[in-house]
Length: 73
Image 1 (tube, rainbow, N blue to C red):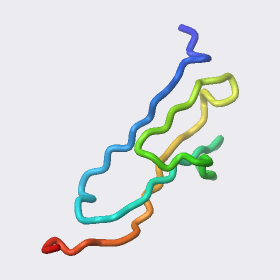
Image 2: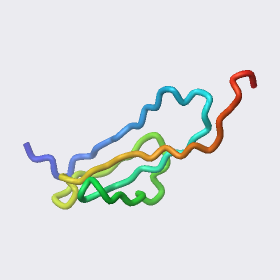
Image 3: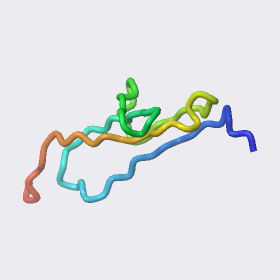
């Protein structure tokens, strides 16, 4: 069961954001506390290859609220 070299596809599925304009930013951490932005990773999916260096790492997506739309618009 060797996972190194395998591709991972992470997908952010948001619910409850129907009337909100938002941006996404994927983040990475070695310790699960201090996260840094993954350069250019601003879509609904993040793809990366599992390596010996990252297989125990943490990944999250940050949601940045840009605007709230009126439901009547």
